[in-house]
Image (cartoon, rainbow, N blue to C red; front, side, top):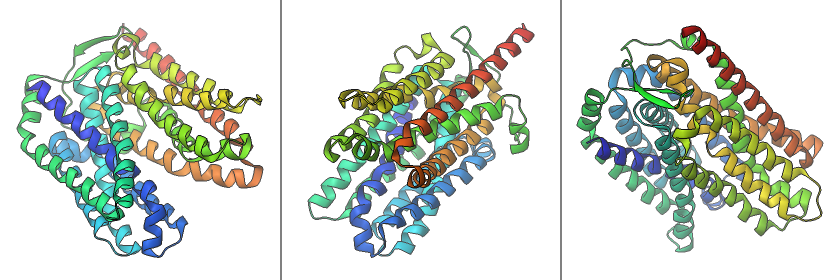
Length: 406
């Protein structure tokens, strides 16, 4: 029963990643078919991001009321309907309308699943599950490419991915009794990151934790700032790294694009590898080591060596460093702030993540238009420093709290 539900959650994480790269990979063709400027992709992604932020902030109340299983099933159903709506949209305004349920579904399922895994499963599973998200995100561009190259058009890619989501929706609704049984027979666990042990915890009380109350918990603003900084680094590198390599290092566009893809593959592979030692190392060490590794990778990108090999290697190293940070931050939430508060705080964390991913890359675009693309490594290093400082301040606070409790 427990293993079967875990397998379903793994499949759900693949499905979470599937839609994420469809807009970016298909937009060069989509905007021509829809007769809109290339830059309109930003409008679409902003609508999706707004929906994810709203549903993330509401996820605690909704998940506490209906349970993680039902929220996950309904959210995936929303995403499936939005993807099929994209497939049959003949105008840009229709895409914008379907982007609303797309964002609402994505944010709710992300917060609900991440909290459920943080409460019920060990750190290795959190890393492997997020690695499976990377598998889904890596597959969807191939689906889009095959649809376009075969002459079926971009809409068929959305039909395929939407169909997969429909099948997953049915599977999730059928599996709802499993979620209830696991909740009854396997209570939430508290992960003591100071001793790397996993012990039974009191189940979360069925009481709503208001947004203001969650934000007032000591240490929460620190982890939100760290999460914001991490997601800003990841999304800025995804969007601008290839452009930096071409304009500042003179690397040809094909090679730069390849290593841009390797950054994502580095994240996926790094999360898979992290799962093998995450329980022994602990979330705090993973976060600290991840930020430091990203800093080393960014420094290699910036150093003015005559060879480009170090800059390209730096991009891969940055991806490996990024790998454990997101899963470790989420997984450490119940241990840091209590199982009763974790759903509310993870929902806010997801909102902070989406805000960082949405705001900071275009902010760098505006900055680079004024200063030049050379400022990218400095911009990234400042964000890395912010994330590292905030997470280390939280660690010290938690150590003081644990010492006082002892």
